[in-house]
Amino acid sequence: MAMIYSVNYDLKQPGRDYSGLYQAIKGCGVWWHFLGSTWLVDTTLDAAGVWKRLEPHFDRNDSALIIGVTRNFSGWLPKEAWEWIHSRQPAAA
Image (cartoon, rainbow, N blue to C red; front, side, top):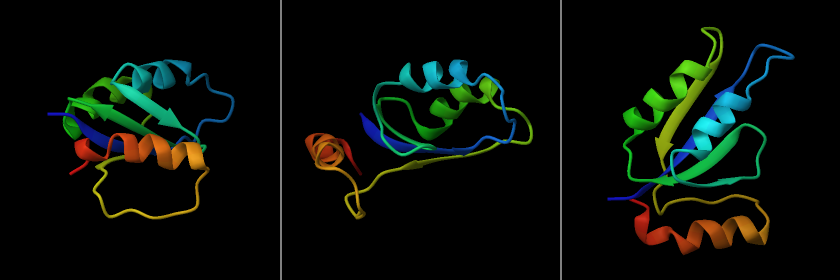
């Protein structure tokens, strides 16, 4: 069953090439990225499965949080972001 996860991170290594991380996130499923350190990923993986794919791309001093997106959300985003979220809402828990 598909689920939308919010992948959030704080990358501490200035100048480090994190392109492998970004490709790993994109490889988890259908994604949306508008906020600098937050991605939404619609995937059949569970949170631990997403982390397993991303972990090799993090340094030990980086931080990450992968959390399921429920139907209880709000914020200030562009119209395209809300359309992406709402188009996948049945997949949200």
